[in-house]
Every structure is written in C-alpha cells, then in structure tokens.
Length: 488
Image (cartoon, rainbow, N blue to C red):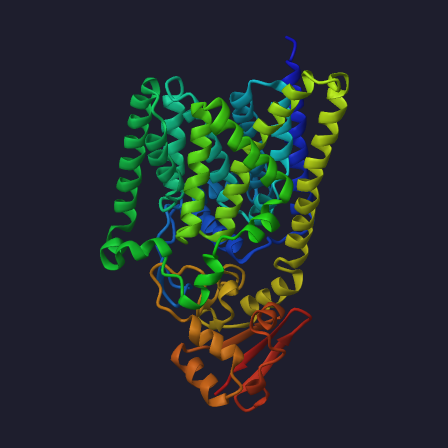
C-alpha cells in the first residue's frame, strides 16, 4: 500500500517538532519549573498509592488540593508502565508536538490548499510561547492545547463531527474545569453566525458544553464558589502577585510575545476571512480570538497562557493570508516563480518562530531548576527531620515538598490557602532580626532556604539578620543556595 505524500510530509514535520522538544528536555535530568515538581509529586504519589493527594500536609502546612488529578493519574500510569523518562520527558514532548497534526487539519479545512496546509503544520512546529510554557515542565498545557485544536477542528464541521466534539469537550473540561475560554467562544459564535443550517448543531454543542462545565465545576468547586463567589475565578491569588499573573494586554506586549510577522499575517488573514469569504470557519476562529482578548482585558486568564492561545489562533489565520497570497501570485507575471517566492516567505516566517523558540528553549533549560538547587533540596531531604518546616520563596514551595519532601510555608496552590505572601516577602527583605523571628515563630519554621532565585526575586544579596549566629546556623551552601537552621 502506497503511503500518501501528505502523510509523509506531516510526519516529518511532526518528528521535527518532537525532536526539538526532546532534544532540549533530555539535556538535563531535572525539570525546569516549580510547577513541574507539583505534577511530578502528585503523579508519583498516585503511582505508589493509587489515590490522589486531596489534603496535602506538606503544602502550607496543610492545604486542600482542588484538582481533577486526571493528568496526574495518566502520568502515574505511564510512569509505572514505562518509567520516569518516558512518562515525564518523552510523552509530554509527544503530546506537545500533536499541535502540528491538528494545526495542519484545521489549516487544510480553512483553505482547502495542500501547500497552505503544509505551511500551517510548519509554523505550528515551533510556537515560541508554547515552548516557553511547556518545555520540560510536565505542563497540562501539552495536552490541553492539542485538545483545544481538536475541538476547534470538530466545530468546523460540527454536523459530521459531533462525537469528536463531545469527546474533546469532555476531556478539556475534566482537565481544566475553570478554563472558560471555549465556553465564551461558543457563546460568541452563536451571536455571530446566522447560518440556519449550522445554528441548530452549534446551539446543541454550546448547550452540551455549558451543562458539562457547570456540572463539573459544581462537583469540584461547589464549596469554594459558595464561599468566595466569582472571586474563585481569580484563584485566590495574593494581591501582590496579581499583576504578575494577570497582566494588562498591550500592543508592545503582543508583538514581543507573539512576533510581528505572525501578528501581521494573522490579522490580515482574519480580515480577509471576515470581510471577503465570510465562511463560518472564520467566525469560529474569530470567536476564539475575541474570547481570548476579552479574558485578557478582564484579567480572567493568566497573561502568559492567554498570549500563547492568542498566538496559536493568529497562526491559524496566517494560513488564510498565505493562501490568498498564493492565489494572487498565480494571476501575476511572477506566477512562474511562485514556488520560490512562497518558499522564501515560509523560510522567513519559520525563522521568525524558530529563532525565539530556540532562545526560549535554551533559557528554560539553563535558567530552570538547576543541579545545584536539586543538590541543596536533596540535602534537606537527607539531613533534616521529616516534619521540618522549610521557608522559601513562593515559586519554590513545590520544590520543597516535591524534591525535599518537607513541609513548605507557601507555594502556588493559592485557591484554598491563607495569604502568606506578604510575610514571606518580608522575611527575605527585612533587615530586622525581631521581624524575622516573629515571622519564623508564627509559621514554626525550622530551616530557611535562600537561593539565587530568591536573591533575584527580592533584589537582595544576603539575609542580614542571619549574621546573628546565635539564632541562625548555616548548615549548607553551594553556588545556588544557602540553607540556614533556625536555632532560636
């Protein structure tokens, strides 16, 4: 049986993306973010006990974890079956590369052009923001984003792909119940599309998704919705961190994070589609873009995640621009050079994505969790009592519980936790021994983990009050961290 040329080409592009992710992920044995160790710890716990951590005694000294744990169960199963490297390095890289396949399917549905479809697959092989958020981080986004593209693909022909829509909608909802992007997009689609032939199917799909989202959110988050109301959407993030998680959207930020060429071609493609062809497929993509912008403006979605999703949508509409450009070339005197011109355009566009993707990948590996940090955390695990309480900055809390297996004072699981951020910040910034002792006594801290990342975060070179050797004993030091034992 002869394999189709397009299958071979898409497979090659998929393998390029997979190889890119795997090349950088396998350069280091550790993972590149604090959140990665949250997922790692929960997955390994499930592998050993077959049960999720519902109440985590090592988070905030005791904290309920509201999570479906579907991702953790899957990773735990893969870890027990194939081992750590496959589960936490290879499989996430494999899932991340699936956006190449789904990007190609959507591109081909949009323009019915094989060349434009290949272009879509190529640009999806290297999405800078996606690399930045997922590479070597065991991130749930490596599965969420491909599923989102699959759901969009099913919406392009909802009448024939109802089953595919229901499956992808269900998986997305149980993975991230509080992600309302697609729900808002479906509502906007109903407002924009007047085609009676698809209105019934779209209404049914929207109704199904609304019921599914409400049902799963009520099952998991009923108590906290009753206690905090809609403020639950902001996940109880401390006020001091709010601007970091939910930044304001601006043109300069979009250009810096997405790239000028994808933005220009993406906007041009969207305008061409909306004003010219007016296909329902364009309205679907436009609705997702509008939803993303609304959520960013209202600060209902983390900035980096929102920008990443916006970049992916613009890359899809870029295909429309390329297709229109190819058609235009055919009727000009440059038609004989069409392949060369399109090839150069593709090279420029790919380079504009590949270069920042490579930079992000290198930074993620080099600036992520280092060997020195792991060494310091493992020292804590091997040389401190099991019930020790360790204080570190907010972005190292999961490292304390995940690598050192000790109780942290604060981490990024804010939803049901008290606000301790101000106290932790004060501890690392104050020069007063009295203030430091008050904070340490309040949270019963046994050890202070003072890393290079903490120095950068709080713009400080040392803990001045730790010079008081009567109250603090330096028990460990390397190039990445210093550990102090609290003795009074």
